[in-house]
Length: 220
Image 1 (spheres, rainbow, N blue to C red):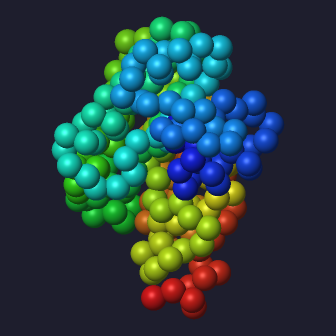
Image 2 (image 1 turned 30 degrees about the vertical axis):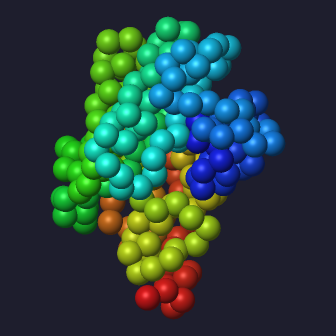
Image 3 (image 1 turned 45 degrees about the horizontal axis):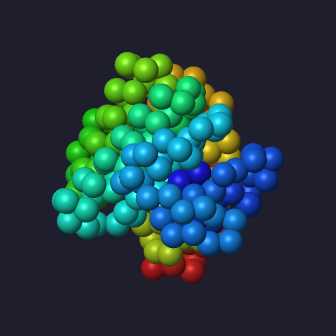
């Protein structure tokens, strides 16, 4: 796992204890090894012996074009290239709803064409395209997760539609690690007000359980 010290990484790996994780992040910490995604040789070294990659690492918010190009796009290409070279068959990539943020979100299918709302969103659209390329050319099984907003509980009214619970995040990644082919999948819980269909998730065996509606009276 890359980005293991980030918000989603910290939620995820304890909920999937059956996986023998090698946890990495830019800065080392107890149980997490240092890995700079912009260092292609270091990524290649860490890839040896892996059977799959959950790629969460990168800049998680809006930043300059140069920053997201270097860290998010080139960093993801380093991960995919290293996986292909090492014979690692599966890569799960954290994308974002911001890759399609300029579309009307209501009913938007999992595989809607990119229409990013920021440089950050553009970087996520770019890594989705890289994932498709490495699937088509190198045969990697790649699932890109268009994550809504993953946190312990909804923070505002928008989250009642786009929230991804920590438990559902773990269920989503577990399903993605068994999927064959290339997939774009919405990372969203079973919210009563969800904007996005469940089609792509169901196709890879993801069946969310949590609903943001339980907090509807507590957010505004």
